[in-house]
Image 1: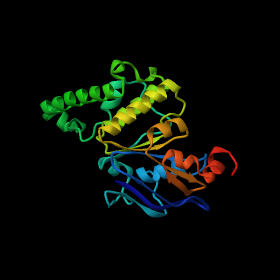
Image 2: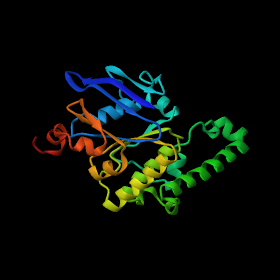
Image 3: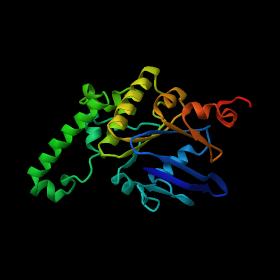
Image 4: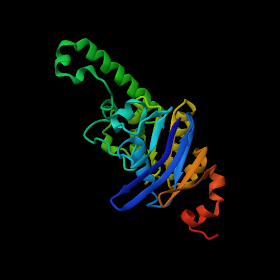
Length: 251
């Protein structure tokens, strides 16, 4: 389980988050919603290690991750995607995944010459794994195409597959539906749901309420840097505080 306990973050005199907490149980999809400027992206950046909080803790199975930088958290299985997918357009879809491999023998110039057989075995295994992951996200037919040629939604799936190359336990998804057509949103949702059924844990920041409703077992609402409420999707959207803060209605 991933736990965020009483996290606070300020930039100068501006307080962005104050005492924010959430639990993300293993093998579940948890959602974070809230109006623009609520502190959602800051929270994700704190969880993944891109930002250090001013107070509070980020725990993974009771291990305190708070002092660890992002790359060490990734090695422990906590990885993220970004709202704007950034592919390496000069490379193929498959090559984009291969760059995400960790602990490659061939990264050493010396090993590339004296351990050629090991390097070849690792490269073959990595390519096979990358193709399996592309199959999982529905991009296998585009493996050898330029990543630049992908649609916006396909680039989101590519970024998800690239995250999977790191053997994650938990994936933080920052607006996976942003700028994506409705059919592709449905496809992305199906992929996320399937991966969760295989044991992966997700935390999803999203503005698309249909996606949140269909995917997330528990939803946390952040407003003005504070925990507003949490519960099932139907429970939180029925809360008049959420209506006022996020959905634009009146009490």
